[in-house]
Image 1 (cartoon, each protein chain N blue to C red):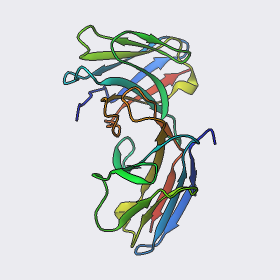
Image 2 (cartoon, rainbow over the protein chains, first blue to last red; image 1 turned 90 degrees about the horizontal axis):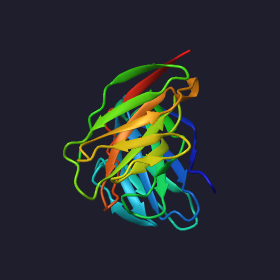
Image 3 (cartoon, one colour; image 1 turned 90 degrees about the vertical axis):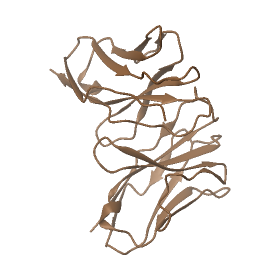
Image 4 (tube, each protein chain N blue to C red; image 1 turned 180 degrees about the horizontal axis):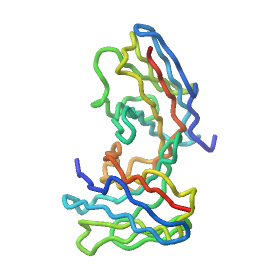
Amino acid sequence: GEEVAQTPKHLVRGEGQKAKLYCAPIKGHSYVFWYQQVLKNEFKFLISFQNENVFDETGMPKERFSAKCLPNSPCSLEIQATKLEDSAVYFCASNKRFRGRNIQYFGAGTRLSVL
Amino acid sequence: DAKTTQPNSMESNEEEPVHLPCNHSTISGTDYIHWYRQLPSQGPEYVIHGLTSNVNNRMASLAIAEDRKSSTLILHRATLRDAAVYYCILRDTTGNQFYFGTGTSLTVIP
C-alpha cells in the first residue's frame, strides 16, 4: 500500500487485559518503527525492525511489551496485562532505507485507553 | 543523541509568512535536519529535510545556518490548515529512530 496502515484506530482495555496493535508498512519499505506518544507532544521510541528482524529495541519496556514483524503479515505490538500508564497513542512508521536522509512515513496511530 | 531546541508555541496571521526556528548546537557533520509536523489527531507528516544547503519544496523552505547549529522552517503563506505542532529532528547517517523533542505548536489566526 501507499500509506502506513494502523489498526485499530481506537482500543479500550480494562487494566490487566491484553492489547494488540497492528501496522502494515508501505509496500517495499524494509524498516518499521514503533513510537509511543503519551503526553501531547512527547514521543518515545519503542522498537524498530529490519524486515522481520529486531533492529533496535532499546526503548521497549522489558516486561509487558513485545513486537513482531512476520513475513506477509502486518507487524504487531502487544501489551500483556495493560496498566493505566500504557494509555497513549501508538504510532508506527516505515522507511525504505536506513540512512539519515530517508523520510519516515507515519501511520495515523492507535489510541489505547486503559480503564 | 543530538538534541534540538524549539520555542513551545508561535502565532501567525493567515496568509503571512512564518519562520519557525530550531537550535541544534550539538549537530554533527553527518546529521540531516528533518522537519515534520503533526496535525491534530494525526500522525507526524514529513515537511522537508536538508544537510547543508537551503532547500525548497512545495510545502516549505528550509534555511540552514552556515555553521549548521540552527535552522529555520519557512512557511511562505500560512493557512489555517498549517496549524500543527512542528518538530525539528536530527537524524544521523545510521538513520536510527527519530528523537522528536517537544516541537513548536503553531496557531494560525484568521
